[in-house]
Length: 428
Image (tube, rainbow, N blue to C red; front, side):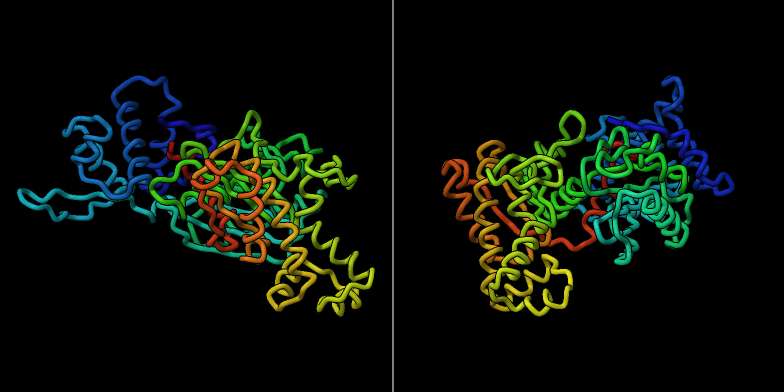
């Protein structure tokens, strides 16, 4: 159940002068032993107790005994040790229909924290979360611009270090930092295959060296997919597709309650399926990708070409001032009844819907969650998308699939990757 990597490096970061931190150091380092002895076995059970409470919330000793298949005396002893070490709180008696009232125990959220950092195309977002995924602190930097240059890499490392140093949480209590970035990412190697590929060290290694805390590198869409699935799911959902319609197009896939990565972590490159015979060269170097017609960048290019050709729109003044027209400007114009903007958004929804029909026929998901910039267009985008999906998918499959717009804020990417590094460290 428990899987940890590089914990020895984590131990160097935790401050020995603190009693709680010393306990944490021993707690997370014990798996590196030979796997024998009572102390090693007890620490495995204690980590399972932490993982169970993180996933299920508060629990009584009887519930822990039943779920973890451990004897009552052992559970009682080890839970008390976790209370003494500051990792678990005794929350007092719980009401029962009759008989003795048992004590209920829950995680001490002020003992351990995790950080999440989203490296976006035009901003960076940072969060600190506790053991139960509650956001403790959140910051957004709109001055950042992502580019594949050494100066940008240095900026990312410096920003990460500055956030950890100024977030208000004792650095030794932050056990892991999740970092997500646009493009293809191999989480096991901690390497981006779109940005900073000329470096010998992986991106996760470079950030780790700067901040001195264990780092997980993840794809941004997959991180947001996990946040959407974890925070917005119904109890019955275990197969979900997250469709991200931003300046690019990508999907996150949840199968049987788990993120699907594929062989090297590259699953979800939905925007690069060869969908059109249009001779347009995509950013990936191929022709006719889905992104060349329906992404935010494609819509931005279309509206500029049409304005240049004389088509009327309320965005003409912005174009004439040589200002950049962003997809968000087009969505705002559509909401103000600009016909050209509405037509372009509806056209994108219809074309995406045909491609989503392929996904539905292939994966048979319970839910398709739509997020990203274009999700903010609401019915202008969703109605043609659903109509087209219905038209091109099998009715037997489509009729059981729910669609919903993302309700999460801009912090979802950072929040999701903070959850993923938490899961990795505590063994979920």
